[in-house]
Length: 349
Image 1 (cartoon, one colour):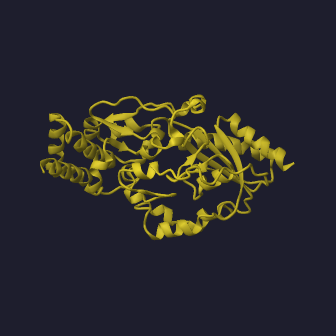
Image 2 (cartoon, one colour):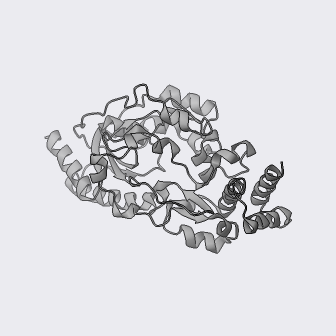
Image 3 (cartoon, rainbow, N blue to C red):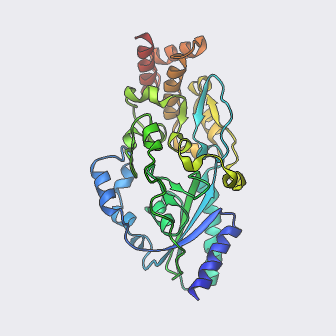
């Protein structure tokens, strides 16, 4: 009976367009000691919200009372490599090039919950996409959706780690699907070796060094020691995924469908244009995408850093002049003017 219920649920998830679906039993996380130590070492950086509800994060039965099962789903994105970029391009991480995955996934998960409430009227269902205190990757591995790699991202066997995760925590008793292998990496260390800021150690990322964190979550000044490593990345970073052997093109990944909601709308921004943005321009450019996460000052700070890296390799009079204007403007956002000043100082050395 439980097997029939589980098949009904996973089939329903696929009907709603999810590429992968599986079911895990609830229970306390196996990473409790690791997470608590990671937080104690302040490797979460400015993400103070991770320090809240730690016990809930470690046990989904505290998120949904009497929870017995977690329905884990995944959407694929960005399997196809991005095109060439222009001379002033600030690159955008692949996950953010399409529609906001939070909305794209949560809408369908809520609809699935509505169907399941009719099927199981005495049970509770809660949809979770990224913002709930839930260790989605661990339970997705338990559910067989994929295996967690050394870069801490979930890897679908034969396709790769270009995945976005969602979950439904429920009180319904569902038969678990088979778990995925625990270690998809063996002796490989390509992600660790390729990370320009040395943010990765096996199965752990120090957010304080991670380019994705620095350009998306870090809301204050970025340490100039990271400027050159940021390169041309204005929002996020895909280096650890791009070098992963599991993400190299193959026959299976070529046939793996990507949900239409994640078709690329923009792969990069012109950094000179970003430096000229006001709030209205920012809203216009990031409307409907996950890039709403970065505020105007953060975007322009990132653009100043990328501009400095561009100028270090090629002349651009207009870009240089804009940085000078920003650095000398007393009314400028300090977050942006500080970055511009540091960039100009480095270029002068």
